Image (cartoon, rainbow, N blue to C red; front, side, top):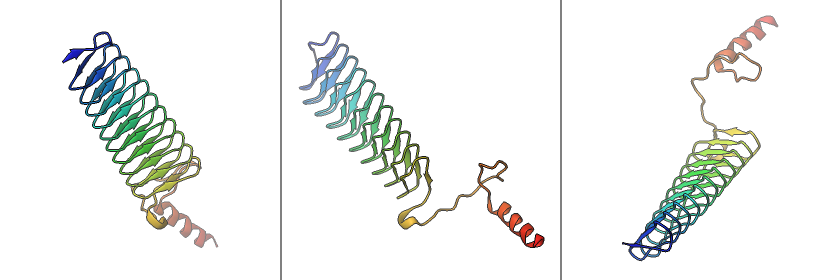
Length: 190
């Protein structure tokens, strides 16, 4: 262990800790951001208060965290967790192998899930939320329009939404029970 150019910094095993109060462990790792930590071969924590853990992980913005081989967190306050996960948008979160959260305040959870729209959320393998404030739920769901929620799947096969309470207001969904009652009332009235 040795102290490096950064004040109160430490480095170990061929690493370089140049940021103030930073630490680097692992061959070729670099912690150049103030209060940054790089752990693992070839990791880079270059943003202030950033953390990179896992071979080749990179955290380059303020408060960013990259955990997993090849993961990248380049948005402020972003988190990328999982092998090859990418969180580019500020305050974005990507969790899962190959997940990508590139929109501002976006969340992608699941293998190769994508959330590229601002404020978008995708949950499930290959789920894609590309519209602003869109939500894609479930494997292969795709929400490409602004404010769209999609719980479909591959080839637009729908999913069942259960446990839905009776809609009361004009902007709430109705359930099957309410629809059946309305149909019976319409038939009786005719």
